[in-house]
Image 1 (tube, rainbow, N blue to C red):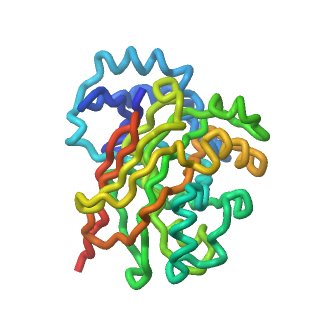
Image 2 (cartoon, helix red, strand yellow):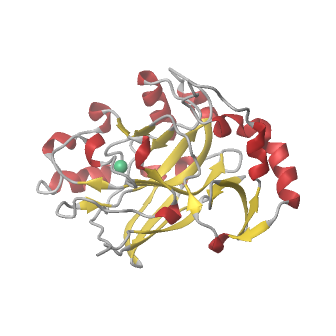
Image 3 (cartoon, rainbow, N blue to C red):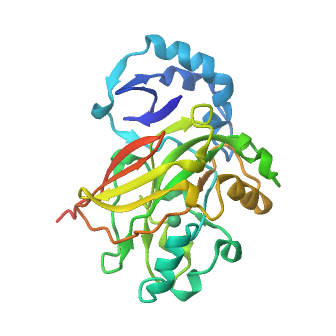
Length: 287
Ligand code: MN
C-alpha cells in the first residue's frame, strides 16, 4: 500500500496517479485523554487496518495526485533518528573539503553514532523548504527514510526488517558549520518526508534501491542503497541499542555523495526506486 496525508490532513491511498480519500479510517481511532501517546497510532495499526483500507479505497472518491497538497505521510512521529556520514564516497568528499565540513563531524558512523532531529522540522513534499539564516551554506541530502512499525529494543540483525512499517524518501536539509548536527538540521521544514509511505509488504528488500536528486533539472546526487556503510538492518540494530524504537519513528539512513547548496526558488526532484518521485520547492524569499 501507498499511504499519504494530503490537503487538510486527509488520509489517502495512492492508486497509480490518483489518491483515494480513506479519511474514514481515522474514525477507528478512539479519542485520547492527556497524556497522549508519544508514538504514531496510525502507523502502529496499519497491519490490522490493511483489509479495511483496501475495501474502503475500492469505493472512495478519487482525486488526481497532481491536484493534492502532499503532507508528511507520518503525522505524529515520536522521534527522528538520523545516520551521519553513512556512504563511503560521502565520507571521502567530506574529508577532502575541510572548509565546508567541520572536522568534529567527519568520522566513521561506528564512532560518531546517530543523532536526533526535532520532529517540528517535519514537512511533506508539497509544503516546501523555507530557508533561514541565508548567510549560511545550506545543503540538500537525499536519504532513504525507514518508518518503524513496532515497539522494539535491542533488535537482532535477522529480526530488524520485521520492525519496519514502510519506506519514504527523506530530505535532511542541513546548515554546514561547526555546531551540533541537531541544531543545524532541526529548523522548521528541514526534514521533508514523502511523497507517501510504501508499506514493507510492497517493498521487502531495501538493500538495492537507486536514488537520484535533481536540483533545477541538474543531477546532484545519484547512488544506490547497496553502498550504505551500515545497511537498514544494521541501523535498526544500532539505534535500538540506545533507544526504544516506536511505531512512527523515522530513521534517516544517511546521504550519499554530491551534497551541495540550495537557494530560495530552487526546485528539487527526489526519486528512490520502488517508492516514487517527489518535487519539493525551496520557497522563494517573500519581499
Ligand atoms: Mn543526513
